[in-house]
Length: 220
Image (cartoon, rainbow, N blue to C red; front, side, top):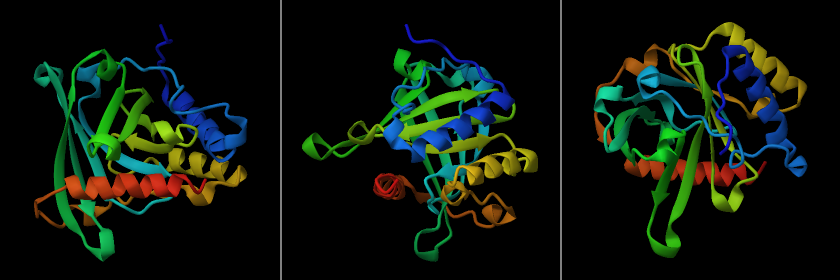
């Protein structure tokens, strides 16, 4: 059985930095999202709001992403995540909310979530993995596709709407040293994120986002 990983806030920062390095040095193949250890998370401790603070590779869409995880009392046969974000495609600023439902099985309990788009030969599966979290401050998520498992997208999630300057500075400093600081997008989580209350369906945007990320990752 793969090892179960528990990470402190400090070691999460170090892990972010090591992933930064390996993501742009794909010839080393020393780390992939696909082969990272499982993280069997506690659904009650992880419940609540998480804000996206940073992402790699560089991408501006969507803005103001926050993910709401359900309390353990609402987890039975399914595990439902709520995605709340701003559709900023073509300079728009629409408030969109979407829900993604996963079966509550061993795969999901171990922090692995598959999103399947399309059907048959046209289907694409994006796998997201929770690499680790301290539950109180920060969580690290990576994502990949089977046909491009050596390159990963990375998301840094925080409990606070605004990332701690100390963590931000540390991540940026070491990323710059490795020559990949320009690949980080610090996601906007300002007061501007609260300016609109328009509710629109988000599935189409999510699909466009996923394909956009795949296209961007291939350039790494």
